[in-house]
Image (tube, rainbow, N blue to C red):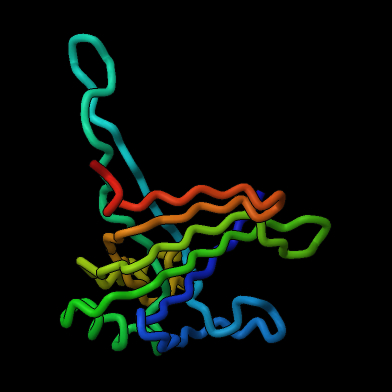
Amino acid sequence: MAHNSYIKFETVDGKFIKGENTEIGSDVSDFVRCFETHSSVMIPTDTQSGKANGARFYDPTWAIVEVGPQSPELFKCLTSGEKLDITHKFYRIENGVQVGFFEMVYKNATLCGEEVILRDTTNRENAETPLLSKLFWRFEEKTMTYTQGNIEHTDSLSAQS
């Protein structure tokens, strides 16, 4: 089943960083189309017993997006340390219609890396691939919501002991 995802980047003072998504009338107009993403949390375990024995930790979250008008603004946030609120919305196709079903919101996120990616466009499989950017970020709070049923949980790293 195909899934689409879109990311909204907003500075913590409320400035929306506009992307190129042109789905007029959708709730993701001007968001940034995401091609691939990864987010993980782990709890250390004792190698002998296999029991959890430490505080949870997050690897940097990353997303691969198409380079667009948001790219210089995000680069500025990366180089200045400006905090962002990031909303990542996930959609699936149901009966030919794109339906939102999952969302991750990162509060007080800091971009901590970027890689610009140009696939080998002489290879036919990559010929139509746009110029991409892999963005990495860390955050102070993450909320995951399964929107069909409004099932939600927030993890605040500042509350971690």
